[in-house]
Length: 115
Image 1: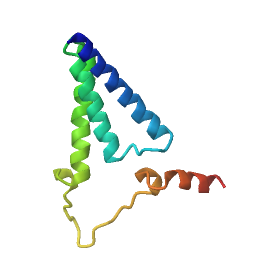
Image 2: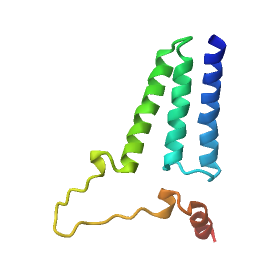
Image 3: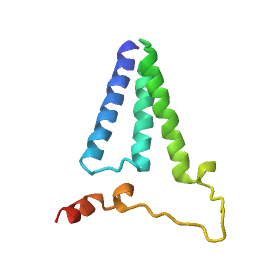
Image 4: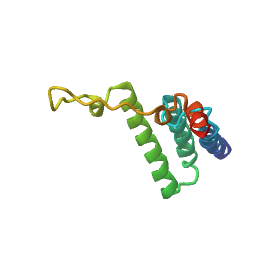
């Protein structure tokens, strides 16, 4: 059983680092749903590995990743109260994120600015 828990922790670490590499290589989006799901899975695997040898700091980090990951997913799917629009004036202001912040076409936008 301890070996299986250790394997879960190693797989979780690989998912953590792999997700970070994908974001840094512009293959995945750090604001995307898939990235949040991978972080939640990685945190759950590392949390599972803590059953064998508990570490309070690691436990708190994993709980934070899971909690904020679920909160971010809820905000993206529109189920959170944070996403509800509450109009404060007759003509609400609209803010559109630049493409670089939404990860849609970020590499192209960076290349266009450089030329």
